[in-house]
Image: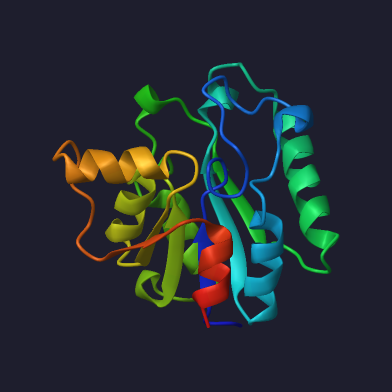
Length: 183
């Protein structure tokens, strides 16, 4: 198995986010260049996993069939570039359910690294929110903050002292800029 693994957040990293949730495939729109970036990173030998909080399911806002349809659209988009995504993990729980899989807790990351047979410090994680960075920190993964989605706000809050990002966070404009640099 590949020892090169990238764990991506979904909303705000791969596709545009919405405060009203991405509830159907019609709401899902990729950030320009993100799908091509996934294909480019996979062509460089990286395995691609997605770890996404989807509390809309637990809140009854998103039906499971719609979540699977959204993911089918994502997979279809990536496959149009002759590539694929190795796995998609999601947490359907509401924040107050105190599960171990909802980021910033590391449950999804632990399960993904276990599936690929690697330790957290052997993988790269990409997110746009503090919770993504905190989950990565909990498994000692290399963290990258993209400035799409909530990324600019996350960075501004850090600079103003409202949040404390982990020490070693790499900043990238978007998934495309990361795909150009990562080897």
